[in-house]
Image 1 (cartoon, rainbow over the protein chains, first blue to last red):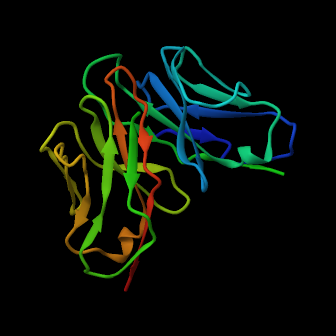
Image 2 (spheres, helix red, strand yellow; image 1 turned 120 degrees about the horizontal axis):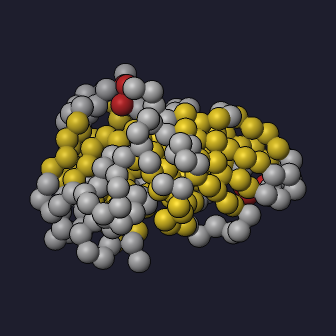
Length: 116
Length: 113
């Protein structure tokens, strides 16, 4: 079974630009979550989608947005990039439906974004 | 609020040494607790989990016990190997209504031959 796929793996942008990152979850998984990982702030939750609906959102400015498509693939977008947005962006997929016991999240390898 | 406090690193050990990485949490209700591992250049892998008090999670020689009375979930391994060198994250999920994980700051483990 293929794992979580994230594209691109590496990205270099300049301040003020915008960027779109893509995540393809494991086949059959309907929930996708995004995290930002930086040396200073560690791993921080960005947002979570289930069946094309945003279920939960972290404490990030409105420049960070996301969406999920009917095939469960997800994208996140960052507009007006700042130097501090340089980070590893991780996507995780999960089979879990709303409610019920917790199921394992499977993480992708991440997209390394560098903002110059 | 919900949070995870994790032992500062880096932790440097010789091969076959005993490993403990401390993790304590603050949460309302009864969270599920996890240890994730991140190898260089890779994403996170679930190492082990425990979903209720006194549960012991174990995998690949690693163990952690969910201690509600001390709000702790310390990671242990009896004999580490060079291949265990990685960053270890303690995390919690506080609600069945979300998959959101709250992570500790991570502990870098370096095992020397």
